[in-house]
Length: 256
Image 1 (cartoon, one colour):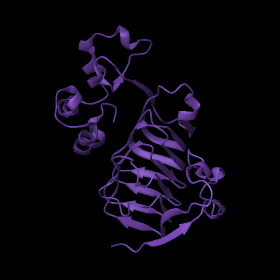
Image 2: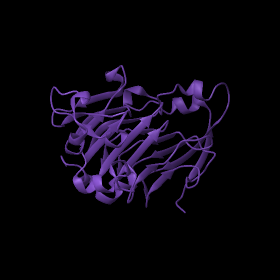
Image 3: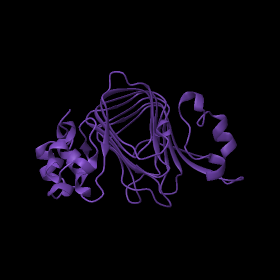
Image 4: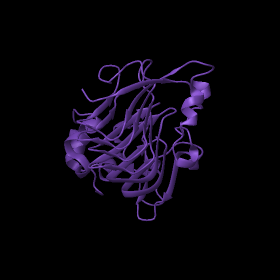
């Protein structure tokens, strides 16, 4: 068991520590005074200094403590495996705040979960964000990964290093994708086919709408390789997208 230090801190005290300082590029999407009104205490799992773990999972079964609202690492967080957000539910933490750098194998983010990193974020394989409601990824420095895929999952970062795929159906794009310097990053719109949902990772030819594509052209336009498509449950295989990416990594994408 890694050395952890528990603290119970109210909203005002937490704000005074600079956790919600937008100038540092780390601020929750939800106003903390709304999330925790009045004098209700916030349960914080706080680790002072750098923290190294085999991996970190946020769900109702495997998280370090089910009654924590937030995990704060006052230093660097180094994961040999993945940062895995399987689900967000009552009783599970909604925030991970890393005041230094975050390094991991892959990141799998979803739902209302907020991942806030003041330094750089680096992943050896893939950064995947899907189906956000109020969650998002915010990084003060650079997101460095061979492939980053954001499917309706907001991201804000100082810069991106690697191939970047984005599917955005949000009416205010600047609220969803805000990158300080993405000049070296390929930005590609990924669209979902509602009728043939199995091919939701499509890169459309320039000037072509999805309605103009024949179904037979979908596999060719899919950003996954043929091997990854064969494994994906949406394209005839038996694996979820996350399982496909665990198996193939960045090599599961044609542009990687």
